Each structure stands twice: as C-alpha cells, then as structure tokens.
Image (cartoon, rainbow, N blue to C red; front, side):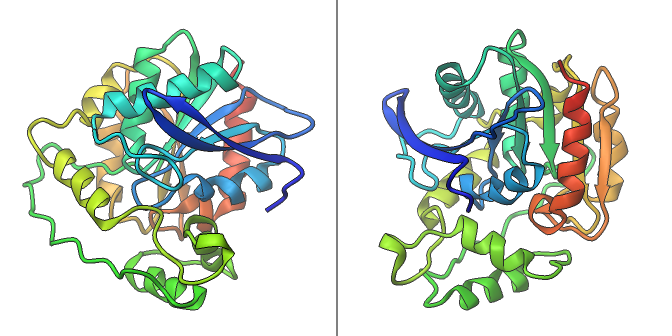
Length: 283
C-alpha cells in the first residue's frame, strides 16, 4: 500500500468508533468519492482501485461492525447511510460522489436520496439485484472457517467460493487487503465475525429490512454509473435491464466481462478507467 498517500484514523459516529482509510492524491482530478464496502470485506477492498486511479480522493470507512469499526448493534440501511454521511460531513468537501459495492449499493442510493444537495453522483459496483418476479429462496446456513494459518489458505478459500476469473496476482492482493491479522503476525481472519454477518443477512432477509434496491433507485435523481461483473451470480445479466430501467434517468453501465462479484479487484484497470471518465463529467 502506498503509505505516502493513505491516511487512516477513526471518528466517533453515532456513538461508536468508525475507522477509515483516506486516499489523498496530491493532484485531485475530480470530486472526491465516499466508498462503501460490501458485506464480505472492509475498507481495504478499495486500496487497489484508489492506487490504480491515482487522482481520485477516496474516503473509505469500515462500516459498522466491519474491519476495525465498532458494532453499535443495528443493521438498518438508513443507519449505515447516516454513518457514512456523518463521516463525509467531517472529512470531505460539501459535494462528493458515493460509491457502494454489493449490499452497500442500497446504502449508497439511500445516502444520495437523503443528502441530495451533497451527493453529486452514485457509483454502484455489482449490486445484489434480485428480480421482483423471482421466487425467494432460503439461504443455506452460514458456515465460515474460524481463521486461516497462511495467506495462501485464505486465497484458496476465496478461489473456491467466488465466481469469475482472477488474473495474475489480483486475488492474492484482494485477500491481503481485506483480511485482518493481529499485529501483522499469526492467523488471517475475516474482517467481520460470523455472528455479525449472520445478523446482517437475517435482517436483510426479514420483512423489517429497508434495503429495497428498486425502490431506492426510483428515488435517485443524480447521475449513476453501474459496474457489473460478467460472471457475477449476484447481478446476473437477466437482471441488468429491469434494474437499469427503474432509475428516472438511465444509468451508464460498464460490463467487466471476466469478473465475478469483485470487479474492482479482478479488473481494476477497467473499473478505474470507467470511474475516471464518469467523474470527469460530474462537477
């Protein structure tokens, strides 16, 4: 990680400590980006993209209960969004772009809806899109390894459980960037506890959840860019058109042909190029 341009710290947000990484390029070429990771990662998921794009300031929080942030015990989409906006209010200029990955795409759209005067645009990276006509299916019980003795063991786990291609050393870098390791030694572990992930998944599958991606899309008026993994099971090709047509203004869509659910890691150059082009038009 290029430590000369990364800053990190924590802020007390809504009663809990929220850790963040902040990529601060010397020559910013666009509006800054508030980047919200998905439920299987933490702020480190954005390291490769920030360092590849180079000139985009990216504020990347560990969301509540993930990475090094504390867990205040609630999983409402509106509260995740309020956390992110509170951090942005302290650390970013008044106008910025919100980017979300996976389940955080709902959070990004909620942030854009609730802070329309501040959010200039939204970027969605492989949102979890379930078609309204699809029959609900029960998720299998979540069973996770406690930890991994070596980084190679963790890489092997992700290679066996995630779809898509991982050219070169992209998977190794991704796993290194998102896994936690106490004091830089010992076992590698996920950036969340199994109980924390189970709780989030139970809430998002419950009638009380407020993560309706289609409803949030209808309420957003700013420009939107979507990246879809060509091999993604969470955002299949059949779901693209119905989702895109939900927005009041048609979003731009960039297909990342060989990627599964993590195109920012597996096709970083393609995503960085698309993001830079999109942000150049957002002023």
